[in-house]
Amino acid sequence: MNKTMEQQDSARGYGPAAKALHWLGALCVVLAWLLGTLGDDFPKAMEADALFVHMSLGLAVIGLLVIRLGWRLGHAPPAPLETALGAWSGHLATATHWLLYALMIAVPVAGITLEFARGQPVPVFGLFDIVSPWVRDRAFASSVKEVHELLANVVLAIASFHAVAALGHHYVLRDATLVRMLPGRRRI
Image (cartoon, rainbow, N blue to C red; front, top):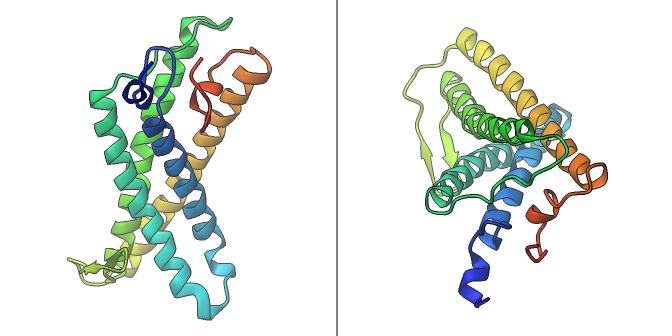
């Protein structure tokens, strides 16, 4: 197999681009969730920096997801492996992926809406700010904060289910579902 072909997804496994987008997205989601969850525990002097990193990670999640979906349009994913669970597990995996994608957009959009409801600008990686189109509205901000936190917890729960399912495929069903997405692994 030539080097160019190894970079692409194939019917048998994921290529390096798909793997990188998957794991970078997962890392950004987990780090953003941790910073959002633990943000109130930071010393006052670090709160602004933690919030900036939290928001940057949220924007990175959106950017990575847009790139990932663009990649997916031109590169069909490998077909689900046949397992002892039957075809329904492939349908459940597909539904879970699309739910994760929707949440990976919804959570950062709710976060952006929260900052705008607070009357605050959204910094874009320290390069420029997007000024809030609204005046400060504390009641609306409070409601949006609850939605943002709920959605963030749901995305982490669904991602955890996704990870446990992958581990179940590997250790219980003993198939190659997990191995196909691990970094640095050759396709089977």
